[in-house]
Length: 450
Image (tube, rainbow, N blue to C red; front, side, top):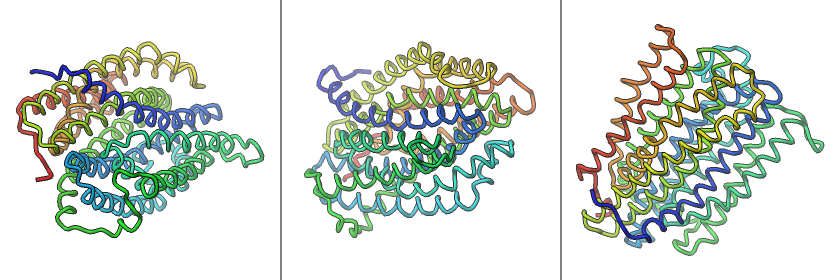
């Protein structure tokens, strides 16, 4: 298994990763600050918004699936410098995002309490969480379009726009949340509903800034609003051929992940609070590897689209696996060093704090596998047009193995919450191993521009 020795290769990934890492950190920091602020009101509101965000998590990952499918194609066509096709792919992705965002928003607005019952049995938590969702659902169509446009920008190596846009929208989000949650500077004191309203306003600002860049400032592709009328049956077919398994993978993975939250959610409010705080930190440090993931995906897609030979492609793939292993191990160390101080930021009961710190030890142990899974299964295989492998692996590793096993341990055997959470996270190790074996087989490489 030879790897790339050129320093320029790794420097290119680092440069592409950096703005996405900053964007991801900004995004997760807002959720973190929201949970901390609401936690200072009461633990129930903090848990309610965390459980309500499970709904958004599923929605967001499907949007990412639509965006990722488009990004795979855009990156490969960018390797060929086919600007006209890239414009058409942008139009297909944006229109798809609008339709999905509106449908999902309507469902959430009509049945927020029914959706929350999946994640909690506490009537008061459901009532509070539903009030958050009814407002937050307004941002879903806006967020869907932004997510797809960000992915389009990544495909043409315009990574800095993500950070620039979010460097404006997320501070606005934090300030609005603070004012609306606590009723500062003459604004009404809305608590959890204030957090929802602040998010909606910030997402609208985000889309306006991003649209100005894509349709006015960008000179690489020079896309215009009139380009949204573009249609192409073959490209639409290609878009959904690539996107469908990725969307399926994201949907299976996100529902499986939230199923884990649902299992812990039925084990008691104290366990929920501890798990949610640990999960917030997990998402926070995930920003580091998410940036690397997106950079690896763009580099690999561009390499394949440019018509590089199989030996070069395999070397880059093995190098990305190594990057994932090293990066994941470093993130695990960060979790061990800073997880406990992070818990101290929250106004948790002593028992909930113990759970949070213990869950973080489990997360730290799984991070080396998670790094490999992210760069291997998600970045490399998807960029090579092999999105089906992630879908198949998640169906077996999550829904046929770890989720049923965790549910049996939690509800029938009365096992320790720590064992339950460890089982939930076991699928990551399985996927990491499968991704390495699949890349080694060399059967995953497909040039989608032919």
